[in-house]
Length: 134
Image 1 (cartoon, rainbow, N blue to C red):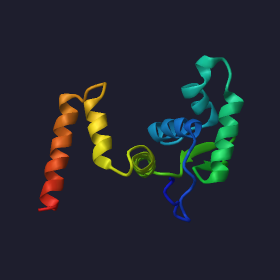
Image 2: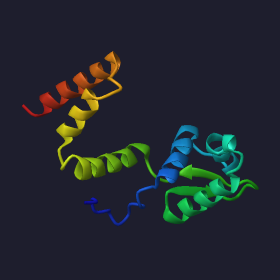
Image 3: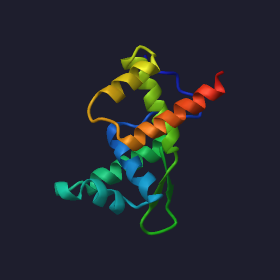
């Protein structure tokens, strides 16, 4: 069951689009060549793939394009944290029967194990949630 999309939300990115968004979130903005170098260069091709995907993503509203320069510059039109939350909500609903606790139990009990720093961060979040819900 997919969660309903708000009318102003762009569609959820595909795996390939998400890979490009990760590059753009890291860089802040980039050209087709930047995306190509980050994702496809070692495969011996892919420039036209990067270009076509960025064009599709622009049409979908996932990226914005500045075409005032010779090389178009793309930047994410969607927020990383909000996109992560959308994917997470979908996974919780479809895979864990709507139970966030089941997701957390599976994530923490599986491999690879959470680091000490991650566990401390999780404890701090749980303490904060506990204080908010007396």
